[in-house]
Image (tube, rainbow, N blue to C red):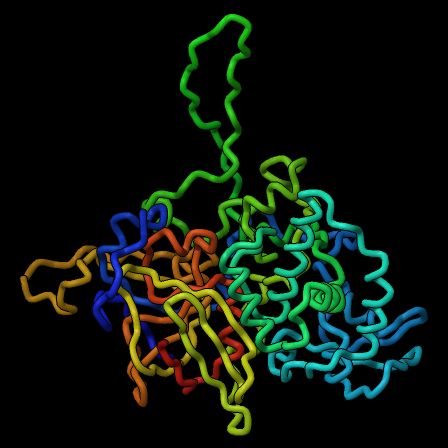
Length: 479
């Protein structure tokens, strides 16, 4: 396995001034140092628990979907629509995976439920809608509520964002807002699906694919392997206000988010876990943490085991299973995969001539950019970072006679600055890794504003999907 080295060699001169206003919390001194990317054994994935892990309650839902990948036996009352909804996939995907030509299924029939890799490997659905989905939409469209309130608008925007996310045209964290990234991504999606240009057609497609904007998730005991032990949070200081006759005293607001970590806390951690259960659930369901808190105003912090959250109805990012199966697919000469980074803002992946995925991407440092064509190499699951606190401009060897500082590490985990996966990159026709990789992030909501360590960042839920679409040797073009 190739090991990456995070350095400070500029690929091409920057054409615009730095846009970052600050550094990722805890890494203020660290962005100036040279860092080495190291692999981590998967057996170490997760935080050590003080008490032995117990089986989750049988009554608690184990996932947002009740049918797991593998063999499924049809029971009385089943229909393809119901089975696909419970499995978190589309009806047409279930039919194609089982080579079904109609919607007739029999009690006792064994259906194959595809896993994430198998869903991603399937070709995109044809433009023509599946008959079963059309009938489902027809039934539900007539019963759809009118959009009269702000909550209705948020639900409608969330439904569209869930559709895009399920179709691998992602916008970053889901937030229920029709922002610039959403509008651009939607336009790209509609350029691939010419039949979805009208609002009515788009809404019908969203209902056919996702059915509803929101789902629920119950926090399990095993989830806390990936969440830091709760710390006592202090409310922020509120400056005193001059009293006026008849005025009410100002109340101190409760801090909505966990305090930023220090560098000492980061290097002391044995596993880079989520700081709170809110972070864990927000990333699992691809959403902005503030948006998640607004959806669940009655949940107290810290949320205990068994807390039920209202969440966007996406296919969950399961951090506990993010390394299951082979990470990268084998190359298929009949359906060659190509990748493009456009404007240092989005990653586009094509299979043959078909655009199959669009994901936001951001550089980790100002001035970092690519040019021409690079090559996708191998992936490092669960990367950790090592440094001797040497300046990025310092030579690799030390000829001064002064011993270098002791090596320090940033442990693997979803809150490592490289996230859950690092993909080595090389210049075209080369197998020598560059200092810059394609990787996840610990700050999915702040990648546009915070400088960090690494190369080119995607949200963890996106890098987990991208790596399963990108065989070794895939050309990566810069536009």
